[in-house]
Each structure stands twice: as structure tokens, then as C-alpha cells.
Length: 281
Image (cartoon, rainbow, N blue to C red; front, top):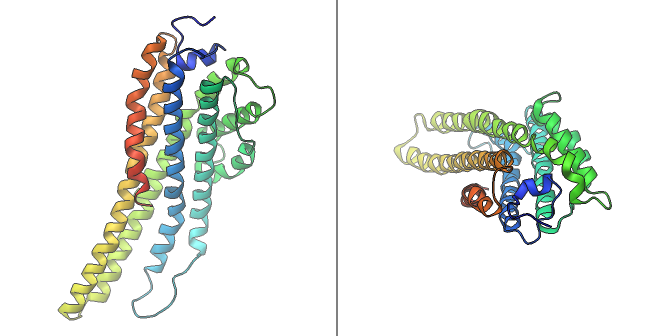
């Protein structure tokens, strides 16, 4: 029978059923918000290569009437990093999907493509990094969880080990967004864009300068929107990581009725930020 002090993740770790407990709904909402955050992250990562290409195309002078490049050797490595980042987000999303399934139904239902995604993630986080090792552990769990007959009771050994890797993976994704996308790609794109307009405007009539300034303002706003969205994604990823860490750390002392109060701030924060990420992409 279920004890009155059953708690969300601890219920799973201790191989107890969540039926009749108030915690499954709170856990499900948190996991659903985590998955939505990771889904919203994928267009951000995809824009990494596009930002690189926009910067390359900004070197073309106005009036050449050449179509923009759709690929460039200098952006190929960025594209691989972007693909790896998207794959890492999908692996992590699969983990929260499995936890959601356990909280809701008592069994784990997960996809089986985690290992194939893992072949791409090293290009994003580094082959021997802590994030890559964590992704490998999560992928192995997802493969095990997708096998027939995998029940909540079998997670007693798996989840504590895999759950500890959430912080490593989210930290790796946050670093990519902050350092590579915001700090390098968007910054370079913004600088080259300004140089392009400024260079072409030199010596032109006031009317042409005004027209160019209007176009620059529009392009600059688009970059700023992407930057703001990426910052919202960073905050949402940190909420995801912190919420899961708090639940894991306090699960042994929490009563079931206290779990919704613990997770609600993180869930609300992610739900608020997700539209802020999506609107720029």
C-alpha cells in the first residue's frame, strides 16, 4: 500500500506506485514543461548555422543582385554543432517523457532512437565531456526503458544514476546558447551587418542614408529578438535543471502534498518563458 508521505520522484526511485497520490499531476506538468522547453530550443539551435550564413551573406555589397548563399564551408562546423545540440535536446526530452510516463502510468514508454541521436551529440558538447558522458547514460536508460515489460520497479537502480546527469546536459546546452550562439554568432552577425550598412551609406544622399538606416533598424531588431529569445531559453533550461535537482535532493523528506508547491515555481517559469522563445523563431 502507498504510504501517506509518498513523494514524486522518490516514489519512483523507491519503486512505489503513484496511484492515488497528488504528486503525479505535478510531476507530469513539470516534465511536460521541460519537454516543451527542449522542443522550443531546437529552432534556436537550428538558427546557429543560419546566423553564420547571414553573416557570410552580409559581406556581399548591395546592388550585386546575387542570391544569398544557402551553404558555406565556414558554416559547416557550426551546422554540425547545431545538429548535435538539437540531438542532445531530443535525448533529454526523451528522458523527461519517460519520467512523465512513469508518473502517469507506472511504466516507462520511450523512443528507441536515443543511441542514433547520441552519434551526433559529441559535435555539440565534445566527445569526452561530462555532458557527452551524461547523454550516454541517459540514452542507455531510454533504450532499457523502451524494452517490453520495463516497469517502475526496475527503475530503482537506473533513475538515481541517470537523474544525476540532468545538470551536466543542461549546463552543456546553456553554454552553447550563451557562448556560441549569443556571444559569438549573433554578435558577429550584428557587427558585420552594421559594417555593411555603414560602408554602403558613406557618401550617399540623406534620402538613401535614411532608407538604409530604416532597413538596418529592422534587421537589428530581428537580431535582438533572437538574442532575447535565446536568453529566455537559458533561463528556462536553468529552471528545468534546478527544479529537477531540488526534487531529487528533497524527495526523501517531502510529503506528497508538498511536491506541487516545490515544482510549481519551476513549471510556471518554464511555461511563461516558452512563448518568449518561440516568438522569435
